[in-house]
Amino acid sequence: MTTRPSVGDRVVHEVTVTQEMTARLFDREIHPVYGTAWMVRHVEEAGRLLVEPYLGPDEDATGYRIEMSHRRAARVGDRLRVVAQVVAVDARGCTAHVEVWGEHGMVGRGVFVQRYVPRGALGGAPTEAGAGTPRRETGEGT
Image (cartoon, rainbow, N blue to C red; front, top):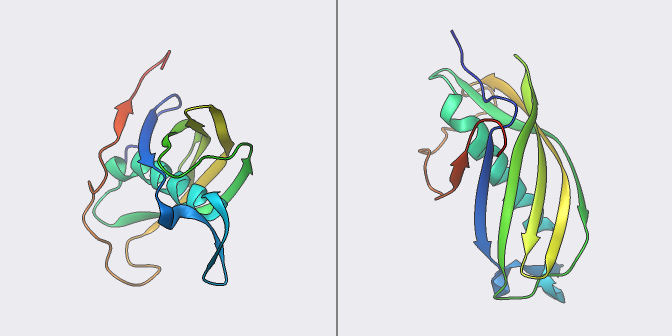
């Protein structure tokens, strides 16, 4: 029987904004603050941390939909917490509410939906899990 994350499961993915993560277009810095593209990447990483422990040997997951609002600037050196919490799960996928918090308040918020797919369906060989060092929180009231 396949297991899935439970509604209420949550992870906290911590990142520190680096110069590389500033808002860049056309290979040049546009603004010296945390770029939305990097926020989306960190949200995807947090979402992956929610589903990866539950993937069977013949299955994988892929991003299906992401909606984010970038609400506040974060500067180089700021420490961010990307908090992803499962709000819905079924046989097809997992939906998480995501918030990005910085030293001065909420940086962004949104929803990330992943769909389960057969391993290898999108080509390439996935790398080993566990590259990040998130905190996993499960159960009610987290």
